Length: 360
Image 1 (cartoon, rainbow, N blue to C red):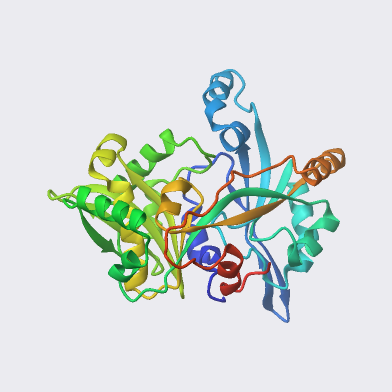
Image 2: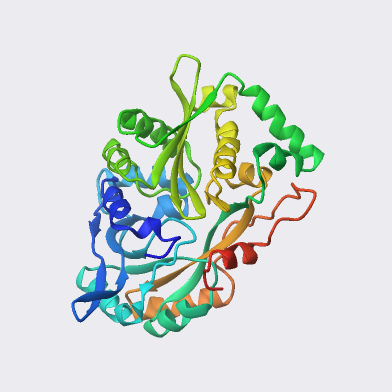
């Protein structure tokens, strides 16, 4: 498998199957020739929680209704690809699998088929998906930081004064914490899941799967997955970052920390800088810091990279409505503009995507 596709490897997908997600049922597709797989589309069925995804602030009201009507505002969905940003969902010549994917979705009773994530609304995805009734819609951008630095001090020195001062204040505020990189994190899996749930329950952004202790234990078995811990003097975990490495690319997938203590200790902001330090010291070219809690990541020097998904409602009438709404620009993603963190401008979002070899 080419570099940059670690989130689609069997081991990681198998670990991900241990998350909590209503109605989760893996359903990947593969095409074979002469007994060999020539294309694959990783996929899974689940019940999309529409309020949690589209309007998290009103989700508690939907939960009240669900006490009497458990299926209220859930939509059976067949999702293809990876929820991890900047990963091409098409492995090999997957064009022949689009029609079987639509058929599998309809047999499984899916109301929607979703293919994600893409860095462009055009390219091969449009050619493959538009004829089958898919519409391209923007989704929240991810934050990517370029790392052309020999050491962390070079990264700080490249910043404009205001942002360098902010970084140093964070490092000073959190000086009681120490960073520890842990490749095998099976032992603290329960604590990692607990801290992750704390972040999940207070998040004001789209919510979906819940990462369980079983997920962390399974992920700990994978060579490409590790955690970066911020420990207090007594050894307890103040915050953590779940990391996924693949060639020159590093993903910051998930994190966890207590809200009040984390604010006082500067645990989350320190964690961001330590992820960047880890990326620099281990020779990664880019770190994808992810699409959530975007503003602190932009202050650290990340560039927002637009993302898109292709969506196909089952009913043809809804396909036409979605296409018309999208064509009028009525579906939008949160706006994000890069901060002028560095003395010299970093690569643009398009250049960062091009370096990964992804289609634009």
